[in-house]
Length: 386
Image 1 (cartoon, rainbow, N blue to C red):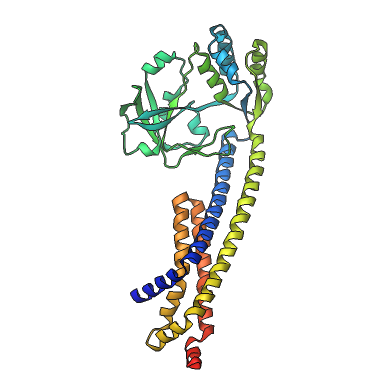
Image 2 (image 1 turned 180 degrees about the vertical axis):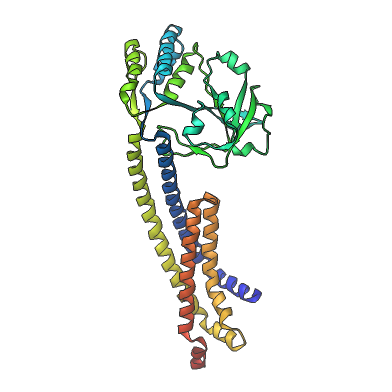
């Protein structure tokens, strides 16, 4: 076996440039196909989450059309605070189920960045978020209306991402690099994800995040603006949201309108299909050419080394030894390409599909190599040459 391995490596070294080009082709084709599978599964997961979230209703979010300059004026104008308070009150009084989800903040602990996701208590149920926490935890996520100063002096309840399960204990109080204190009230399951309206093409992973309650400082215009645009309204009657639009119109405050996020999934679906067709076609064509190249390489390998193979067989080598030397190169090329795909995508469902495809390709190459060697009748050829 060691001798056959050495012979195989020497044969690969004789054509290392060709081997390298074949390897690059296979790696690119596998990565492209893995990307396509990942895109498909991500969209499928997003679609399932939205369907679970909305049920038979629609999801409406407020589309923000305000400029940065206008925001700066709004945030710094204390005379407008009462207008924002009124819109917030109308939103809270509207008899429509709403979820609040704001992912605009982060903190650091021991110089490690942590994403802060502020949510309303129904986020866990509506988004199907599971983990190591009891239902009593949800009461900690009641909407707060403290001033920013009061809120920063509180110990914030936190459901931590899976990455922190080995770093902290339930009930432990920790402090970030800015002095803010957090109490760990639960941990999320591994690979917990969510999707946010207007960011629908991305699945966001919560493994390295802290989930905290929503707080509204009714004396902070910027804080109230973030709350307004973080609300997701779930209803099958858009008319139920008319009071919010009417109040904003009367106050002449924000440039915004309600957008049906559920309908946007069709656009996302079309974009996803186009992406899959484009990259999928490229990956399949490249893989076909790569397999053809490997087949040609096997034919050339047998033709170039058939005299050597025949000598080895006449000296006692069996067919299995020669067969190993022929297929070893294919195993190296495809096996290393699979490892590169794993480095990019990890042990995901998309990667496992690549493993299946690579197995099928190797099986085909094994069969072809076997039949090719059998048809060559190597020993007879050396006898004829002799």
